[in-house]
Length: 136
Image 1 (cartoon, helix red, strand yellow):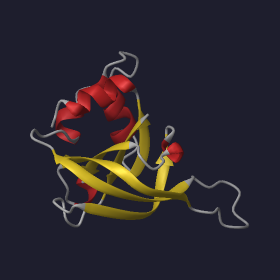
Image 2 (cartoon, rainbow, N blue to C red; image 1 turned 90 degrees about the vertical axis):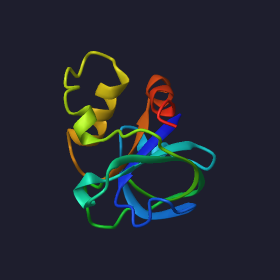
Image 3 (cartoon, rainbow, N blue to C red; image 1 turned 180 degrees about the vertical axis):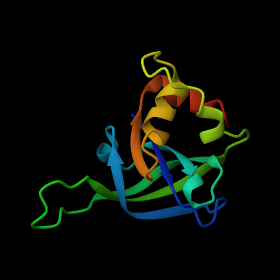
């Protein structure tokens, strides 16, 4: 399975990124070493959307805190960059894809990344991973 991370990125051209306690949704908690990750620089934090593709080199679940009933699973993850995106893909390009039942990759990304605009790691379908691969 491939994953997408949308988060604040300090250096979009870094060779490796380390992200602590990232929120996971839509299967994101299954991220593991060796998985492919498409990196989106969060527009909420001044980023421009899809910036890179990489491979997970370290991943570990963050333990839940005691005394809190409902907690979103979080993970610490390190990603080694493999390629920089050659075309833009972000909120503005995905905004019109709102027919949640159409099964299209752009719609899956809009739903998972921007319907709830928080930063997160999400799992994506093979079709969506192939669609994202076309941006490199």
